Length: 249
Ligand code: NAD
Image 1: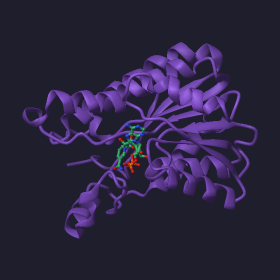
Image 2 (image 1 turned 180 degrees about the horizontal axis):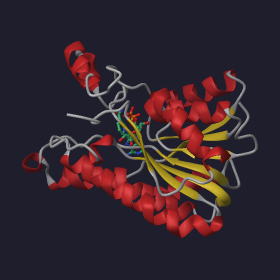
Image 3 (image 1 turned 180 degrees about the vertical axis):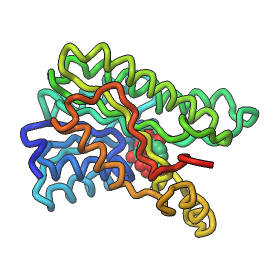
């Protein structure tokens, strides 16, 4: 477990859920990990403490995303702890429920601000810090592959992330930087409060050929591969991490 020794990583939205699992996994591989959070300092510090207890190193940084100047604020906070980054994971995101007739303009703007605009400018403002040979990994979603009409604006925001991934892979290739996305299926995190209902959870489990919902570590393990040298010949891709959801009818 030393594939990322000497590397510095930044994981957005790492105080809980998938981001926390990614931060833990990258740290377990030897990376020094920036644990970004929006408001829950206690949870971010727990993530850092857990990493340190397991023998890794990490630091917490605060910045609200989806507001003007968010990317600059994030990197200013990051700069207080590290002088460059090798692995940038754009994980922070929010749900955007609603069929098209239910989505207000304000809801749409918020979902796009956090899920699509923030990663765009976090990458843009991070380019001078991102070292050659680095990695950018963006969290998309299986809702870009299988239609979920009840998540219209969310799905569209993740579609933007996937096209950004493809485009930047071309832009950053000459620097040896790979840019990939991962698209989880239904993962058991706080983004899905409805999963507290066993019947709803069982229904979601049925999306996967393995008949279970995913766990954050199922995603973190794939991100760890994309962060490592093992994935050096993979770029501009969107890796489905959904337990085979939507494979058949
Ligand atoms: P989560 O709600 O548990 O975690 C989301 C994280 O993003 C939190 O740490 C939160 O603080 C952070 N965040 C949200 N809004 C923010 C803001 N305005 N500023 C800064 N940070 C903010 O959800 P999760 O399931 O761990 O989701 C992580 C990523 O995975 C998201 O991009 C989500 O869209 C994606 N995803 C999740 C699932 C799933 O089923 N859980 C499926 C596909 C994709």
